Image 1: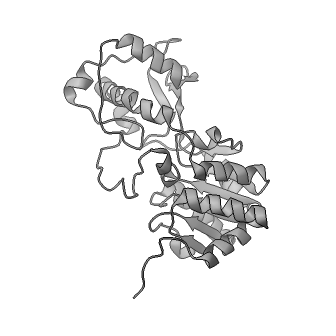
Image 2: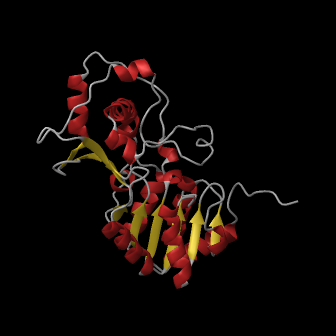
Image 3: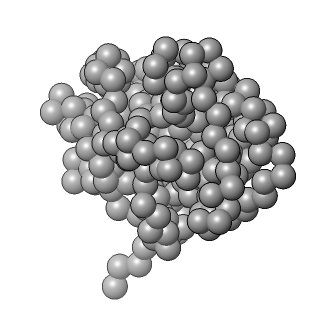
Length: 282
């Protein structure tokens, strides 16, 4: 009977080393890369237990009540996301970039941890939670500034709850009802986190930039993404169509396993650390 390898076979790791050693590798990362930093995953082992309804763009824009709920929950969740630190996986990716082996990094994550680990060429497919955008004047401001204003507007407000991957917390209706939202300090417009909500499209120039990184690569390395949504899966599709080899390191199956030259079902931090050590010994 076939049992699932808990540690990836040495042959597979050796193949991965060989693939990455050639350089020009495009990295596509997802929520699974950040779980070791304490940020929950959607579809991994921690994700299955949660069935929170994600905020849609339409609801956020259309209802002051929805915005109040979003910002109250996100204000609590930010304490965890904002304090999260890069893990061994993020550090390994930054190290690969420093060694000149990467064509670029496309991330589906909104947590900024690739950059915090020192990576420079990062395209945030879904934007970043560390910025806020005004829907009227389009000015982008730091999230830290908004958090300060929210604390001032809600001096006696207390909220705590379980954290979701989008960086919001599960709160009671009572907790939400007492929360005061603030608007753009420049024009008084509605503020939204600078992330792509469900029901909203990734800006086309950003998608094109991601396709260019993948299309110009020698290999595509997928890290911690189940590729369950088109948003990430299309880049694996592009690589497959161009005959660019795909390697996947993820815990659990992914939407591109059939197209992959190599799949490792393994924890990301230890696997990627091992990869950088072996590459250094080459």
